Length: 311
Image (cartoon, rainbow, N blue to C red; front, side):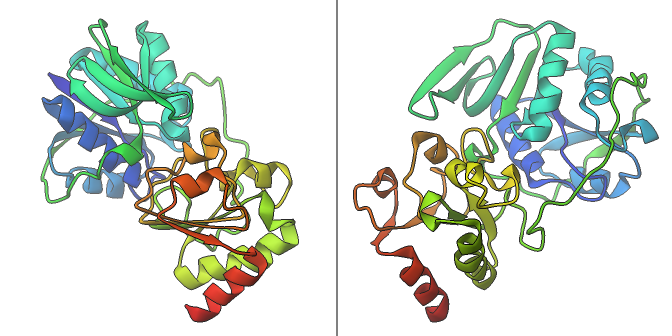
């Protein structure tokens, strides 16, 4: 069995999600190849070939992949798909754009956000916001899979894979990147892959209070900023890139601090795999208390500044 992992990167650095996806591929078994498609992406290819367990890195370095447009990437994957029994991508916004297009082009069913590999054709995925698990078996000869990266430990480094250049597929010309704006708060670590996440919810009260309460805590800990959907919808944060949850970013940091977050099931689905969960809330019956390792029943306006001062 030969497996292709589609690498996520920004043309300069390989994203950690790729390491988690390779780890999932290793559970399936067989030779693992990594596809690096980009422009001026030599450093990414160098990083990919060092992933333990990777046999080959395929590099498509061409200007048409500079902006990593999903239509062109999917067409490239289709052009080399004949060599592979399974094609994997991380279940991140990047992977969720590319993998469904690949599955459609290959006329197979996509298996989404797997959390466990039972066999080469059988996988476990969570459903109903993580309230239940489904075991699915694929009868397709070629599997297209997205991987819930928080469910698999990152693959180790230290490998030395062969590197092979591949020809670019056709430029479909159906989309173009108009602009890319960095989100406000970009001086904090990126939410995806952060080791510490500090999230604020509706209980924070306002956008001004979010800055007053959450920013000092995140800065003190060197953590990323997050928010519940309620806080995003209320405009407490500038945009939805802060959102943690089923319809936002799924995280599994070493430390997750939830401030003023009650814990709707959709939010819990996006952070329940965190190693240590700390919740600060004045409602002892808040659902998040049920999964928190440490729960502080307190007024966040008093407790958080006191915590920052103590740290």
